[in-house]
Structures are given as C-alpha cells and as structure tokens.
Image 1 (cartoon, rainbow, N blue to C red):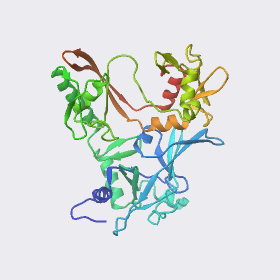
Image 2: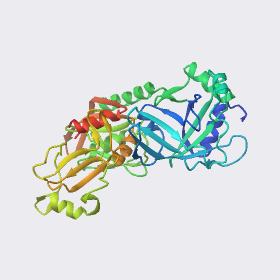
Image 3: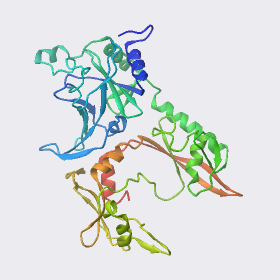
Image 4: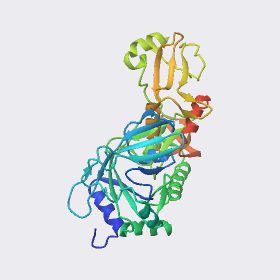
Length: 398
C-alpha cells in the first residue's frame, strides 16, 4: 500500500473514491469484531442512517426480542493489485431494537478479496496479546448504496494512523463508533445558522424554485415556501437524496403539525384495491371523495369508521414484540383497511436524515406571493426509535 505522498488512510480513501465512494468512514476493531461474533456497529439508531442498506425485515429470536435484518451491497477492495472490488453477497445488517444494537454479519462468505484471516476469531492467546493493539475497518459509501470495505491488519500502518488521529482529536466521531476526516459537526451547524441569518436579514423573498438546470423560475403554488427556501441554498428539488446543506435537511414550517414521514401503506384494502378503500372509507365532497382526518391510536374516527391500532407493540417495554405487526387501520368488522408494517416503518425511519432544520416563515401577498424566513429555527438531531414508537402509541405523533 503506497502513494507518492499519501498516508495509508489517504491512499485507501483515494482508491475508494476512484471506485465511486462519496463518503469515507472508519472504525477501530476490537477482538470481538470477527467473522464469528460479527462486527459491532454501535448502539445508536443513527448508524442505520449512516450505513446504506436494503429493506429491514423483522423476525423473532429466542432471547433477544425481535431482530431486523437488511441486506448490504458490500464489496471488498484490494490495495495491492489493480483488482476491481469483489462483492460479499451474504453481507447484512442486524438490528436489535431491544438493546439497541446494530451488527454486520455475512461479510466474508463469497468474496475472494474478503480478509478472512484478519477477521478470523482469535484464540485465547491471541486475544490476550492483542489488547491495546489497533486494527481498523474502512468503509466507503457510494451513491448506488454500494459499500466499499477494507480491513487493515493488527498494528498495521493504517490502523496505527487511525488510532493516532482519534487520540489527537483529528477525526470526527459519528453514529457512536465510527469516525471520519471531515469538518466537525459544530462547524456545519454554524455555517447553516449564518446562512439563515443572512436570509432573515435580507427580508421577504419572492416565491420561486430552481429548475433542473439550477435556474430560478417563478413558482406560485401553496407549497412554495419549501422550494423557495431550497432555492436560497442553491438546492435543486429532488436533485439528490443526501442532506441539503452542510449535513442538514431543510424544512420550511409555517404553522400546525410537522410531517415526519409519508410512507404508503404496504398491506390492507388500500394496497390492493384503492377504489374500494375510497368508496368504503372516504368522504364525499362535491364531485370527489377524500380520505382525511387525524386517526388516533385506539379511537374510532367518526367519519371513516376506522380505528388505528398499533399491533405487535408492547407499550410497557417500548418495543416491537411481533414483527408481523404494525400500524393498522381496521373497520368496525375487523377488516384491515390499511397497514404500515413495522418493516416498512423502520426502513423508512432509518433512511430519514439525521439532522433536520425547521425554519419558520410567514407569507406576504403582494402582486405575487413572498415569504419571510425566520427568525425561529428548530434544529433537530437523531431520533431514538423507542421514543418514536412510543410517541405514536401515546398519540403524541399523529
């Protein structure tokens, strides 16, 4: 492993970027991080937002409560020869909500470049000798959800470099056990607030949005506040899936409730016969039928006749006990009108941005609509899954 002037970590990072990685993170590995005991990815739900993964599918366990598994598009790279990355088709994330805890398994099988010897479970003698000796895993995240991986040897040059950076405070800790060489989070927060302060000081802004080419165009629909705010940050609508600015997602908020997420039901009449769903549970308004209104857990809605139930959830333990459950809308006869399975809810929640800024605004109607953003800004970081599920059950999240 070498470059003209690269450090070992810089060399691996540059190689991963040549294969399409947009973000590089690294993690010190303990003795227990091996192919038998899996690799510990932390006890923070934010790690599910950090690691690109497929849909989470729940299944019961004998003594660890419900666990959720998600496939990973993991490929190992070779730093010594010009060999393209080789996938490890069995790689997956395992999420245990009870603890909470996230692990990676199946990362060796099927890949000729997988570091089987480096990740081999240690003997008792090896375990004792390696205490305090660094070993490191480097991951590169690509836009297509591919994860590029490289594991350095015990006391290797890259492992020692990473250890030194962490000790000297030259690496930023993220998602409880990972690190990266980027600006500290506080710097992104400061830049965001400085930009919002400039926007507030500048006064009311004419409603508009950026087109696909980044050109500002007029936009007069009622939802123009969000597009207008994004345009002030140079953000093209639906241009990319990542955070909007300095690691933060931007949301314009006027008044009323804040929408956390809008996933489609994945079961029930709504799923297989939308026309019947609207006919049976919708409300007739002039020439159309609408399905609206707040549906609260365990309370029948007076117009739709549906009751929202949180099936498979234990409110005393704050955890999912049946992976086949979810948020269910049932009618008075017990029929499932619509259902959001826990698999669907957790998968959607795990892919929300870890940091969101809610920016207040007021509307000024002149010849066209203008928006004045600020001064109130709410910065929201992370999201404890147990709090989220309990908020739905206790009707704090509607």
